[in-house]
Every structure is written in structure tokens, then in C-alpha cells.
Amino acid sequence: MAKKVERKQDIHHRKVREIARKYKRDGYTVKVEGVRGYGRPATVGAQRHRPDIEAMKSGKRVIVEVKTARSLARDKDQLKTFARSASYRSGTEFHLVVTNPRKRQAESKRSIMDRNSRIHESSRLKSIDKPPRPKEKSR
Image (cartoon, rainbow, N blue to C red; front, side, top):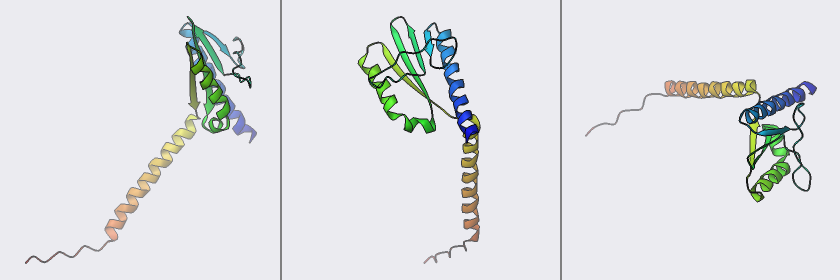
């Protein structure tokens, strides 16, 4: 269990660092939660949620939150707070990034392909097993 949680955190942190580097390359001042070398983003809302990334450039502010598919449902209130805050403040955008392990995505694509292949094979076999339809007599 600990390894699974650790792996999901690694995926999350890797994506956060990747996005932060992109904003920094694009000339933004970037603050990142939990990454050395960046300041901490400001808190948002009455519950004082802190986004993963806060990027600012020329009066534009971007709040970025990275989630895995599993954490998406769990953190609905936090996401609503970020979205509401961005909608009330001019020049502020909220970006939600959903990331998952690449291996798992490849496995799920493979299992879908396998399932579709089995369905196709099954329908092919059913058509072989059916006796031919009697021909209608012409008058």
C-alpha cells in the first residue's frame, strides 16, 4: 500500500515540476507548493487551500492544480474554490491537470483492445455456429 501511495505522489510531483518549468520558460514568476527553489503559492478561499502552482506574468495569474484520477473526486471542494476564485478575479485563470501513470494507461488500452478482440472473435464464432438460413422459395 505504501508503495502505491508513494508512486502516485511521484507521478503528481513529477507533473507539477514539469508544468512549473514550462511556465518559468515562458517568462512567468512561478511559485510551487512543496518544491525547493520556488516560493509557496498564496492560499485561496476561506478554507485557505493552497494550489500546486501559482504563475504570474504581466498582470495575469494562473492557478494550477494537478490531480490524479483518484484524487479528483476526493478534492471537489478545493477545485470549486480555485475555480470560483479565478472567476471572480479579473486576469486570473484556473487550470486543472489530471495525470495518471503511463503504464496503467497502456495497460487499460491493452485490456480494451483485448476485450474488443475477444468480442470480435466471439461474434465470428457465433456466426460460424449458426445453421444457414433456409432460402425463400420464389413463386
